[in-house]
Image (cartoon, rainbow, N blue to C red; front, top):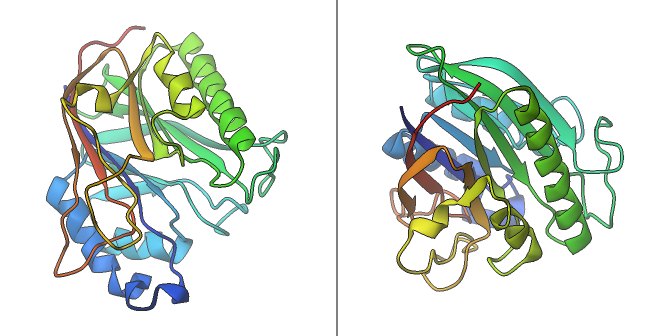
Length: 262
């Protein structure tokens, strides 16, 4: 079962970005997504109207999640999925704080509320094939918040997999370079694989502040369980119609699910 996934920090709509405000980028973002045609992808920094405008341009996708301030308020770490290929079994969201069920909550010196959005899915044509998808955006200031946040996400993954060992995809802007303890924590998990591990060279940067470039290191990642065969991973650094869709490059993984354990 082939599965193409993507993680894409959209860059929140900010007037300080001048020519790179969302209204000048929404069509570029949509075109980039259509270009790669993922079955499912996680976004970060999307405001509600940004997501609804994307949905208007991406008719084959539904999305799930809520804002980090609760409901439709604040930035989303939403999950988009192709409604004609997979169906949603269950969904949820929790806050990366000491009060994970409290919208807008934050802890451990985090600059702002952070969330993890998740969904359990099955393929429409092969309903016995299921997977779980987790998407997050870790704090950009507090290392403690990043480390505690990734621990919470891992605990949630473990809890879900105790009930059913579905294939897992974890996407996100982790605000962490490869040597950071957050990345080392995930890489040390026997069940998980860093998708960049299949590259022969360095992954290069995924954040570029609308300046482009190929020198640096990633902060956007896709981790998977070991029942996923990694075929190829791409950091797409191309422009669309003369401009960058975001201040982050999208990361795209081509993979296949080897098996599902019940």
